[in-house]
Amino acid sequence: MTDTITLGTIEHIDPAQIEVETNVRTIVKVDTALVASIREFGVLEPVVCRRSTEGTVSVRMGQRRVLAAREAGRTTIPAYIVEGDDSTVTRLVEQFAENEHRADLTEPERAAVFQQLAFEGLSVPQIAKQTGVKKAVVEAGIKVADSQFAGQLASKHEVTLDQAAALIEFEDDKEAVSRLVQYAEESPDQFAHELQRQRDNRVRADAVAAERTTLIEMGYTILESRPDSYYDKEHTSIRDLVTAEGEPVTVEHLTDVTPKFAHVRSFYTGDVDVAYYVTDPKAHGFRKVSASGNVSGPMSEEQKAERKTLIANNKAWASAEVVRREWLATLLSRKTLPKDASPFIAQALTAHRNTIAAAIGNGNRLAASLLSLDAPDSYWAASPLDTLAASQPGKAGHIALAVVIGGYEASTGKHTWRNPGRDAFAYFTQLAAWGYPLSEVEQIVADATPAERPAPEPDPDDADEVDPDEFEG
Image 1 (cartoon, rainbow, N blue to C red):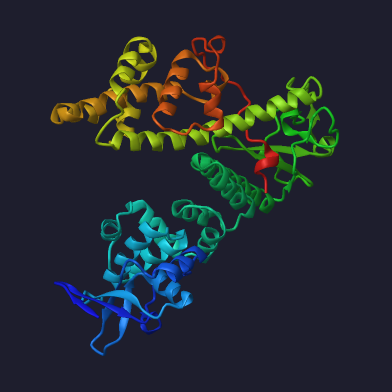
Image 2: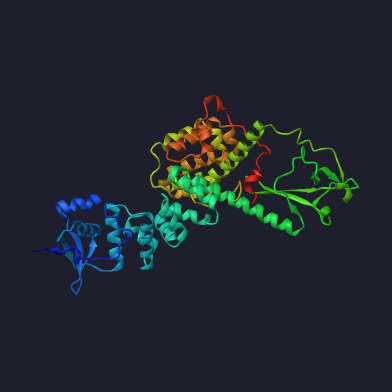
């Protein structure tokens, strides 16, 4: 039975005689419900096939229906026979579109399609346009397809292509991968924050490891933990020692000393701190001076817990700042600003004017950076915002919002979570309302009660170092 139409013919064909081409779906899932439906009612919508010059009929769209019809024992199914383009690119794109709408492709399957299209010569923008997928996702997919490690993760866990691609950099760190996968599956909105924390942790750990290697080559024995001057009577810090002439002992005095010891730790800023120790000061001509006064006694368990929280939150704040500013740059790159951007700007320039004024007086450095412009070199240098505002009046709203956000950002720091002022509370709650996923430490600011929101006062202290037990390896 043949029904001729303009673009092809509809024919009833034995599904066993239809050739199933290599499809973008690497694992074909024919569910029992589909088989039961076709067994009872048949294939109601024709599959799309192509007949070759040799007479072979191959399915272009409807692979699952062909396989289900075979399993259901149907002798014929309706097939729409076309003479369309048989190129690999066309077939992949058509099958990708059909499977995306009918039965979602797995992440590894999507990655395989992007990789194959790239092999066929398509650029990332071209693949994105052909498939209707964002360029960043296409780039991540190709990266995942090229990595056996990422491909296995995407197959085994509920991670997106961009998450799987990000995990590649931690392939040698099982603990980091496990933690990131947990965030991807249980708290996907917090994945970016945990990713940045793990990246910062790695940078700090690498810096500590590099310094340790240098010290070992210089003859030092590395101490795994920093000696407690209250309990440890074996190791003496050179900060508590002077030479026979009364000069403070320095690293240079330890050149020929054996044994000598060092402890390395990293601060939340990434800076590395080294403390030096000896075990027999008198044998090397050193003598002790009065204690530095930093330790008056052992810390209580409560003090240790508070200290640990302080260090952890300071680190978390530094990591969150990177994620937040990347998100802000994306927000400001959109063609349309949030509907309530104007009231937000007005409140910032009035109720929170002191905070915003600081950034304006500093050349709007952060604002320029968030708009992907070169920040002014100095306080007196012209800002690129000046010419942008004059040449592109249509960007006025974006510029104003960037200046306001730059003011808020310039006023934040590790002190913000400890002293969440009214301005910071208003700022972070607004970001959350616009869709920014607050990290746990930023949520502290947004959850602050009115009594906990006084005018902000920076609280500098010496508690910024990273817990050495977390960053020594």
